[in-house]
Image 1: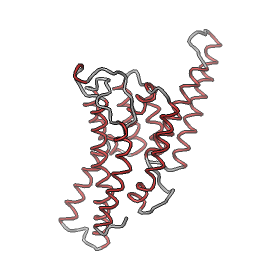
Image 2 (image 1 turned 90 degrees about the vertical axis):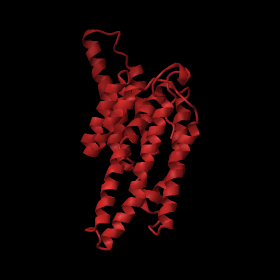
Image 3 (image 1 turned 90 degrees about the horizontal axis):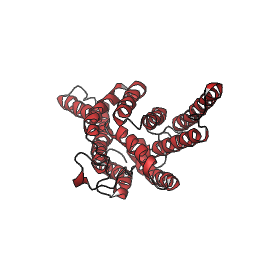
Image 4 (image 1 turned 30 degrees about the horizontal axis):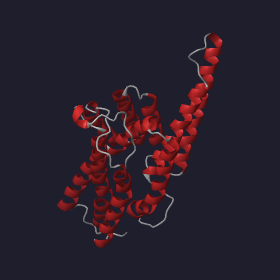
Length: 272
């Protein structure tokens, strides 16, 4: 899933550190580990519970493996949020960017439902592309409102009034985006939209923004999300370059890997 056109065209060889491509690969690998646990291992554990073997050594070992894999998977979403905000700032056409996210949200829904809802069509829980799309539209709306309500050139009471108006508009847009994600029950829901908003507002200080975003995800989404604090290490070495460009691989990887995991589950007799 490629969600960034990072800020410089400098070749990776000219600047040490981790490129946007490197961050995307970390996100892809950690997401695959997480989803393998959330599909195959979770269904195996549920079958063992139904068979009454949850007290066995095998069940205990698999439970530990499952927990560790899900912890590793907490790294992925904050990276995608960061790269989404990068993409928002550097893409040449935000409308096309949003359209790509929308198209892949549609493409991904059936594989997502097969993997997590064990159905070919369900609206009970929806894929992360929808979260990213709503997050993009939210920060886009906030960006435009801030541009249309400038306060830097004003002083005194007028400045305070405009500042209050801008704050109210930002809050309304954020609540609308968060409410929509929660209503659609997208992956990460409202706390995902707030995470994207935090990264957008603290974009000029990416380490602070990333850390604050992970803190918020842990507070609102569960303490397991705090495992993503480990991503501050590669984030520290992010060099701002784009790196290798194979963007549609990252878009396509999401629905393809979910489809493959679903087919593996089916072949193992674990449902679709």
